[in-house]
Amino acid sequence: MATTSNLSAIIRYYAEKQKSPFIDLKEFCVYIKKYAEHHVEEQSELVKYLGDPTGTVVAELQGLSEKKLVAIINSNNKKTIVSITYLASKYANLYKDMMKNESIPYPQGTDLPKQFPNQVLEHKAASQYIPAIIEKENTKSPLLYVLDFSRDLPSMLIPACVPIKALLDTAQQKVRKILKKDEFHDYFLKKLRSTNPTKEISIKNFYTHFVDTENYQFAEFNDGEDYYIWNQSLYYIRQDFEKIQDRTVEDTNILQAVQILETHSSYLKEKFQNEHKRAEAIKELESALAKPPYFYSMPQILKFQDNNGRTLYGQYTEDDLKEFLQKMTTDGEANELPQLLVFKVESGTRYYVYKKKVSQVVVRLCNEAHESIAKQLEDHWYEVLLDYERLPEMSNASEFEACLHEMVEKNSPILYALLNANFMNILSYESAEDNMDSFRLFVDGKLLPYSDLLMLKNSKILTNAKSRLPFYYTLPVISWIMSLFNGRKKEKKRATSAVIAEKNPFEEEEKKSDSGPKLTKTQALAANAKEIAKDLVPEGSTLDRELNYLTKQWNKMISKEAYNNLTEDVNSLIRDYTRRVVKTLSATSFTRERVENLAKTLVNTPNMQKIKEEKALTEYVILYMLRLVSNFQ
Image 1 (cartoon, rainbow, N blue to C red):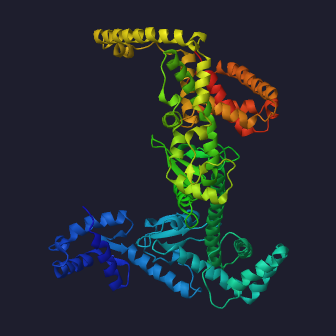
Image 2 (tube, one colour; image 1 turned 180 degrees about the vertical axis):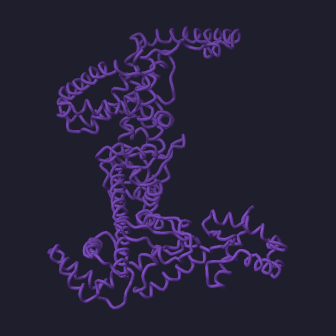
Image 3 (spheres, helix red, strand yellow; image 1 turned 45 degrees about the horizontal axis):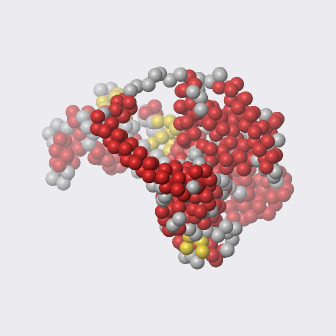
């Protein structure tokens, strides 16, 4: 039967009237029937106690017993209800009195009435209970626990409703009372001074604020000198009182108070250490965001590692990360952009970049896009010229700008998103005031044209494309005749293609639906390598583009010949190493973690250790190995 929420409260109320936790079942049934008759109009659920309530009460008592709110004693055909909530309330009031008078001892298990069934109370180890209620208090709980101590100290009673601050407060008062006593005051002070000769001032301040002051105030210790002296004081008190053979109640209380406080101090120590690790991890996160390539998505941020190779995420929580990013992306000086800026590419991926690094990111991405866009344009224009055609962008500056705009959007989405971010206009004014950029992105508050940013000229690209044409394209008459034939040929080709498409419109779909043969080991490795590379190569970039960038990071040779020789030597080492290890790998074992470990092993070899830029070199080895494996057939 479901337990009425009021029954436990009614039992406690009746026990308080009787001033005893022990209630005769028959007497209580008579009482609750009268109680129901009197209050049923206000509380309709009491209707079940009208008539003979014995069966209902007994059934509900079973549920309350399982919840440790009551106990049932069967003796000589007599049933007695024991109100545990009454006792919990009684001892909770004792703790309140103890905060006003530290001489009141902690309630012991032996203080319970003789006929009380001690086995019904749940035991809690002090070393576990105290940290647990610090993390999550439930001051409305009516439960009563037995708190067990280590070092052969007797257990004590603790109502769950007693707040942790009240428990610590009573313990501090008991310790403070000992330190204030004449026979102990100078004794423990001398001990602290003798073992900490360099902390004389700190010890004096601790005694001034905690011991010698007339008005007691609960002390919340932070990581520092006071916390250290406090722990030493607890240690010395415990050391001395544990030597006492015939302990008084006060001696036992002191040792219980010390253990409560030492448990709390151990919790604080772990908390301080975790906070320190968290703060250090946040600093490393802040530092990592300022390293090349300077712009990072959330998946990349979650993979940041510390100097020991441990992932930073986990050393701080998800909430810590959100709070950090929120602060960095919103807090800023008046009328200025925040330190960390956010921009989003068309796919929806958000990237974070430091305001002071925007110029470097733009320059880097423009340099990378320069070669690929120039090559694509030159190849395309060459094909167009072969067909004796011309494009507007070959000679028209505005059309060329529009063409570059489209190509950047397609080939370098990160660069495009960054150049078109809302903060760029504001950044133009801040950059003009700071005047710190070695490469000016703005002129008169406006972003430079794409042609200037990419350092591309349509005339140069056109010249390069023309230089690849056969010589007779430069002869006007021949060129004109060939263009006529070419035009007719193209029209015929288009017509033929239309007929073929009409005859078999499903041919391409049939080709696509054909299932290929089962992958070999090398093909499976190649497929894995391509998937891993997708995760490592930033959106809009390519494997070759990243390899080219990283080469410049670790290869510091000045002369072109030395630069090329070193690059080839490193590539040769990677190729030989990859050939050897790939023979022992299966497709399932070829994971990102495995590739990273292989790369670190190679970088740590004597030949590779001569190169100082270890981080860039490791990243280069990883990508180069992936490129090699990706090309397996």
